[in-house]
Image 1 (tube, rainbow, N blue to C red):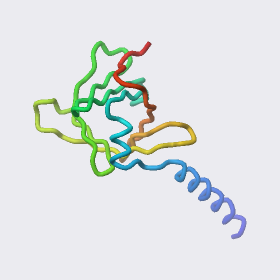
Image 2: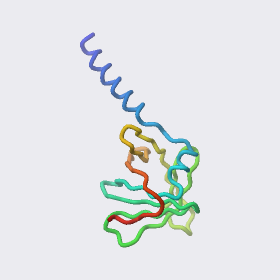
Image 3: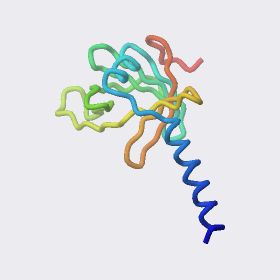
Length: 129
């Protein structure tokens, strides 16, 4: 029994260390992180960029697209929420926590069955040069 306990304990310790390295951001931290900036990341295995205007408009583009998609976003209750249902339609919000991995310098959108890494850029930049 002691032999099986040690490997399980080691795995649990490794998982605790991994979880401790990622910290969820608060509402204010998410506002400061995203507003007026462009993020760059991977979304469903595709290189993407997304800009977050101060007005609540967000522009999202994936590599190879001719033009960005427009949506609206809000940040509340420690989550980033976006609605891609069309700017003039009743919004259907999808919300995600944002966690920071300080060791790797990455952020992640995190939700049920969804995890997408990104980094922070400066200002407005939707190019893939």
